[in-house]
Length: 171
Image 1 (cartoon, rainbow, N blue to C red):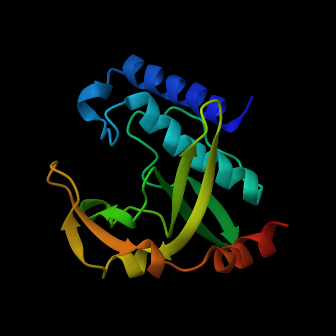
Image 2 (image 1 turned 45 degrees about the vertical axis):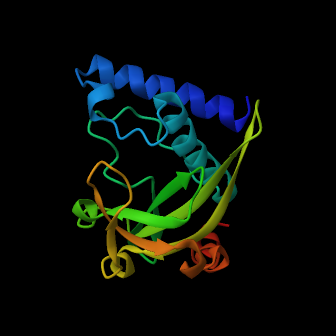
């Protein structure tokens, strides 16, 4: 099963699990693409590719109230480092909702999803820390009225620096 197929299956299970838990997924989800299945597929594909690249496990558990903005936790020098992968079709900026800054991951990774019909690819563009994102400018990027802290993709830290931190610990 390829990445896109895996992401679709996990996304379907997530949606069903939330409905079974009594959540109105259609009313509560922030659907960036006008298609819930595509939104879930894109996000989950980013997580799957990140896990594959860095030898991590994807958490496929259904969590009715979300994952708290933390996709992965790695242990470094006795401390937990949390990572959230933000995957988009057209990733110009790394975005973090202002209201989520207090609970988001320590490290935020921006990724680009490319669809190839039967499969997909995910490219990791860069990363930033929560502490830096806290002092970034704020702006609404949609008609939903959500205020986001943002940092342009060209200003993000290069992936090799994150790789140096997490790969040296695990590989």
